[in-house]
Length: 350
Image 1: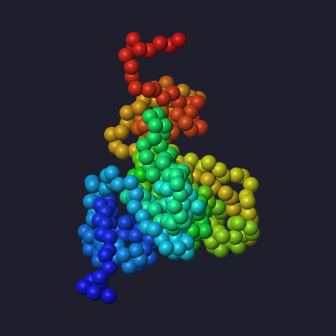
Image 2: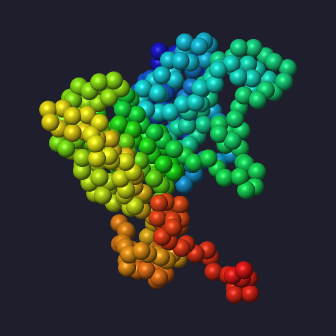
Image 3: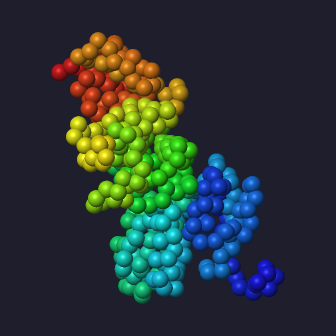
């Protein structure tokens, strides 16, 4: 059917997006179709069900605004599940709510954020009710302001080995507090694909954000190890130093092996395999070193991946993200982290 022959009324919506490629990937998956028009600076989708004209305008500085959420009312549960499964299979997280009461109606729905953080609701209508209902989570789903003093929930994105790793993570640049890779490096990935996993994870992490990896590693690389139980999903076991070298090559700071036991979990053809848990942190922006810390010992000095040398008893300036790691990590007893200086009249040693 040509545009001239289409007599249906279509709802038109135009969204500002930070990155056109990432947004096209999200809506291509959401609608299960290719864009009707795709240019270097513009994209348009025209699904028949729902009858919509959605245009995407790359305008990084104008993303967001007073918009609460957008969505679709589906005619039946099968179509709802189909759309949700497309997103989940592509590694795009959703939040499902069954038979909830909200907006004076009973609904079953799921929620998903597009790459710019815009909230989309897809639901089926099950009937009217006489009260508003409590189905919508004001803090998590709608993002309504929290009472003063209440911290926002951290933004965490997680990938698991039984899912494909998406070409683009469904988050805007610098918005995630943590990315978790659970078994990702036990997939059959080549070197370029492993580097892309790290690069995409770093793209969405905030400065100081944490990258966590959980992976089975071996004393030698092992292809197709054919392990028992849940480990049967493992397709490749990297050499035990490889994940660590990936983190270091990506410039992550505070890299640490959280778990690596002396006893192997599995042995195949004389090759021991062990569980490795690894963390690292995205470096803070240059010029962000505004917090003083002091190393208390027991060694004369220690250094970190950012090039700081902490000499015992000497104050050193670090970024707020580094200060948080030192204040809350396993080295907390070895460091003093100083607050913003006050006047001497405001300070007492008690």
